[in-house]
Amino acid sequence: MLRPFTITLPGAASRREKKPMNLDLFWERIFSEEAPDVRAAWEALEPEEQESVRQLLREIAADEGRVIEQRRAAGFALEIVGAAPGTDGLPPGALAFARELARDAGIRLRKVEGLLVATLKKDGTLVTEFDLEADRNISNAIRERYPDHGVLSEEQAQVFGGEEWVWVIDPIDGTSNFTWGFPTWGVLIGLLHHGTPVMGVADFPMIGHQYYGIEGAGAWLNDEPIKAAQADSLQPTQLFSACSRTLKFGKPNLPMKARISGSTGFDLAMLARGSVVGVIQQSVHVWDVAAMWPIVRAAGAQVASNLSEGLFPLIKDLDYGDIGFAILGACNETLEASVRERLSDRFKPIHALDHG
Image 1: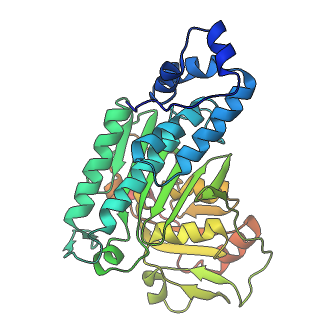
Image 2 (image 1 turned 90 degrees about the vertical axis):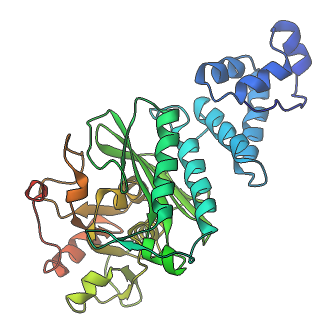
C-alpha cells in the first residue's frame, strides 16, 4: 500500500467537520487499488474537490519520475471514478494495470536487448530466455491480480479455456529484432471479453512509444489520441507495411512504398497512427494481433484475418499454437477493398480447424 500524500484540498477543513474521513485515510483509500475503498473516498469529496483530486491523479499517472506502484494506483483510481476514457465495463483498473505491466516488462528487456543468442522453435520462430521470463512474469502478475481470468500466451498456455475474460500476451513481439538490437520490438498485452478483444496495450521501449486502445472508445500513443490515415485512393507517396514472406511472392501489386519492420505489432501500430495506409502479414498467431486489434479498430482502421471462420471470438478448447494465419489491414473500408483485391494472390481464405 502506498504512503498517503499530504496536501490541502480546497474546502477540506469544512468537509472534515461534516464527514469523518481525514486526509490520511482519504489518500490511503484513493491509492488502495481496491474499488470499494476508492469509491468511498471519492464520494466523500465535494464536486470542486473531486476536480482537484482528478487533476492530481492524472499528473501522478503520467509522471515517469514516480515509482511504478504510484503511477499504477493513480491510474486505477482514475478508472474507478470514471475519469479514464472508455474504461466503463472493463475489470477495475485493467487499463492502468496493463499499461504499467507492459512498460515495466519493456524497461527490463531493453537492458539485455541485442546481447542474446536465440533458439529456433519448431514453428521456425525464435525464442530467448527473456521471452520465457517475461512471459512468466506477466502471466503471474495477471493471475495474482485477476485470479478468475484466463491467460493465453506465446510461450506458455496456448489453449483457450473459454473464460469470460482472457489476457493474450506476446512478451516480445519481434524476437529476431530484439536479439540483434533492431529497435522495432515490443511487449503486447490484450484483454478479451467472451473471446473478443476489447482492450490492448503495445509498448515499444526502444523508441519510447506506448500505444493503447479500447474498443469503441479510442486509441492513444503516449496519452495522445491517434487516428488512422484519411485516404480515398492508393498513391505512390503512401507507405505500406509488409513482411518478408510477402515479398517472397514477388513485388505486391500496389503502387505504395513497402516497409518491413520485422514486428507485426509495430506494423499495426503504424496503421493505427496513420503512418502507413495498409498492412499485410503472411504468418501470424493470435498473440501477435490480439492486443493490436482494438487499437487499430478504435483508431478507425480495418483489420481482418484470412480465416474463413473469422479469428474472433476465440473457440473454446482450441490450441492456438497450431493456428497460423495471415492478416490484412487498411486505413478505411474503401482502401481495404482495393488492397484485398490487389493482394488476392497472397491473402487467400483458410480454415482454422484444419490446422488442429
